[in-house]
Length: 167
Image 1 (tube, rainbow, N blue to C red):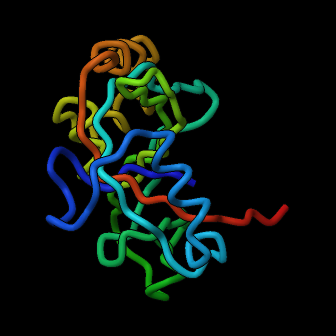
Image 2: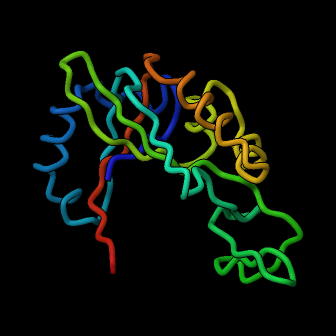
């Protein structure tokens, strides 16, 4: 799984700048990454080709105010299984995918998780605005937001790791 971690300039001085194909090769040759134990981090510069918008799926999740894990809405409030508490509110937090293409023309799906990189990719628009658009049925507003932010060049700190999904 490849996920954008931070906006421009994220990481430290030791984080290598690479093209997408090189990043995929380096990650696949790293036994620790392929075992799922750890992730590897790379800086990638490219253009956002497309931000995926599935109208049947939200592009954010409601997160715990404390630990940022997903919460469920129940009659008592928002339940965080991680904190084992109920809260009066939850924080909309970005969770969407995009296609990033580098100078070589190689494109890759990148998962955008979290507000720091989500705000950066979507031009400073907070996830709470996206939540309001979704709740009010403003599908055209969401499409416009995603279209407006496509084809811009970004530098992202990308986390590469092996994830196994249970069915």
